[in-house]
Image 1 (cartoon, rainbow, N blue to C red):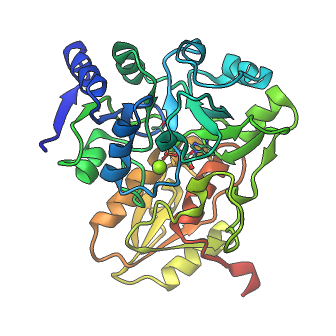
Image 2 (image 1 turned 180 degrees about the vertical axis):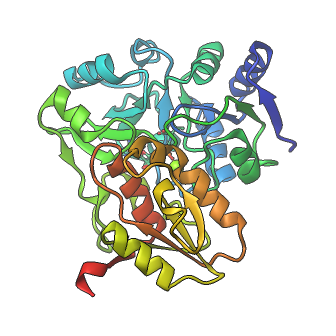
Length: 344
Ligand code: TXA
Ligand code: MG
């Protein structure tokens, strides 16, 4: 199959919507990362997503809508909890996914056999137009091959999925750069399953009590029960070995320079570039967690393009604000390998 790479003109948006109505797959831009969309109401269309990505069948998908009223219009859930309405008023459209009890219209391919469904209303105008034009809720995981970093540009999608999907619509580089925050409201207490652009602090400011799932910051023990199947897979892993250093800024510089050779590199901040003696992949200013989120996956892909790099050193990110999302992705990219320099 030849994959069409389309600009986001109205004509191409209509073309993309037509492909989706006919059960095809379209890569589309969202403000978080690019998604790989199919008709969420059609199990056979959704099954193609799993085949194209090489995604494990037990990992459920997010359903994307273009208006809050779409939840009722398409009859996606059994009931809408008050907490969902409150969060939607504050954070939709935007990088927040909410899990609710699903209705019978959600195919098993979407929910992976769970009795819940994850729903998101993205803010990217092109995503909204494609959803509206197709008049469908769209199931869409990140548009990468399973296990590689999520795509933040149309070219990332092409490089992973060209020949495996019908089309990609180019809507520029994703703003947030990391996947949405996932929160479950299907249980007694709201719980964050994946941190993202909407922070724990923001969610607590609206709902009060919000828990943080254990899998967000810690490696799951073998056989442990997972609330969000996506958390159990090794994710975002570049070919090079990523090592996280828990240390002060000066210890980081000293450690990386002591280990400098042609096969080492640093995933670092702008302030480090001048003083490090290795190839630097900067995520932006040290205090700018949003910039770090925005650039993380793009830099991880650039590291992969350099065959010489075998080891990459990064600081353990801060847990404040969007920093927690960067921490969550990087610690998985590192396979939970952290060296605590304070303890050596
Ligand atoms: O920003 C995003 O969320 C992007 C864009 C395209 O919207 N999508 C995305 O999808 O990141 P994906 O499939 O890569 O990640 C979805 C995550 C997975 O960890 C999955 O296990 C979890 O959400 N998830 C989906 N439905 C769920 C459910 N019913 N219960 C628990 N976790 C669920
Ligand atoms: Mg993904």
